[in-house]
Length: 293
Ligand SMILES: Cc1cc2nc3c(=O)[nH]c(=O)nc-3n(C[C@H](O)[C@H](O)[C@H](O)COP(=O)(O)OP(=O)(O)OC[C@H]3O[C@@H](n4cnc5c(N)ncnc54)[C@H](O)[C@@H]3O)c2cc1C
Image (cartoon, rainbow, N blue to C red):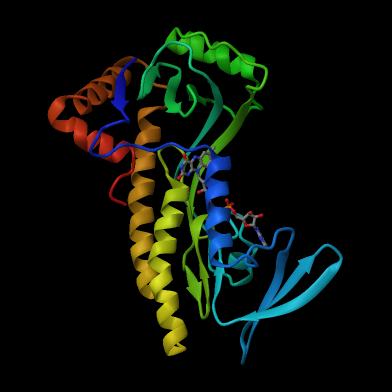
């Protein structure tokens, strides 16, 4: 193992929550604000500007209806149809790599630490999850379909740790990519979250950056409604800056984990060890966990 980082630092702990719990909290909060706000099974399939604001075509099963809004926030993900419809651009940025991951029961007591195992054939990252579970992410050469046995073999070969595969454990493969929209808004329609910026999940914190964007956007929307004038340039500037910073950090994290041999490996390992020494540890933790976006 080349490096490990404490995630339970009393001053700045890194909090981990399973996705189902995040969704549960978001649904509860939205329902408390307006019980009728969430409409599942409904897709926006077109939009146009009118005197009433933005008129959207809403499709729900066989039914199609129109609805109007003064401001539209398009948080429709990486493949955002609204971004394409408004021609806001989608530029690929540097930083692409393939990974396989699984969540498994704690095997050895690795504690409340993130561990980085930098093997010649690629990195294995390991993070603690609630309920004595751990996420394992291994860099691989090709975007193969993942199966838990192959991933367990990779982890054993690179770390010496044998995962005990529980029946519910499964593995998934993903390709880390980074993109950004050229513009985040057109008129009264503004992009939020992955629709505006896709970050590599390798320390990428895409969801967290989406939330930072929502916090920044809220006062801008209030202002736009009050003045009846949509201007999202300030939000776009601040969010582009944060996304750029996150992309550079994710790119660095990915470069540190790529397969390397010979002298390059020696240099990479030395850099990781130096970053783990006391004066630099705080900076490394901050960068690795994406603080200060
Ligand atoms: C393997 C992996 C691990 C990750 N781990 C982390 C992590 O630990 N921390 C972190 O911060 N981030 C993480 N991320 C990133 C995070 O998942 C994304 O940044 C986040 O989900 C983006 O949220 P979003 O709401 O912008 O988009 P999405 O989650 O993609 O949601 C978009 C929604 O819009 C809906 N939609 C699309 N089109 C329409 C339409 N026309 N009409 C109506 N609805 C529509 C979709 O159905 C979907 O529900 C990870 C990503 C991956 C791939």
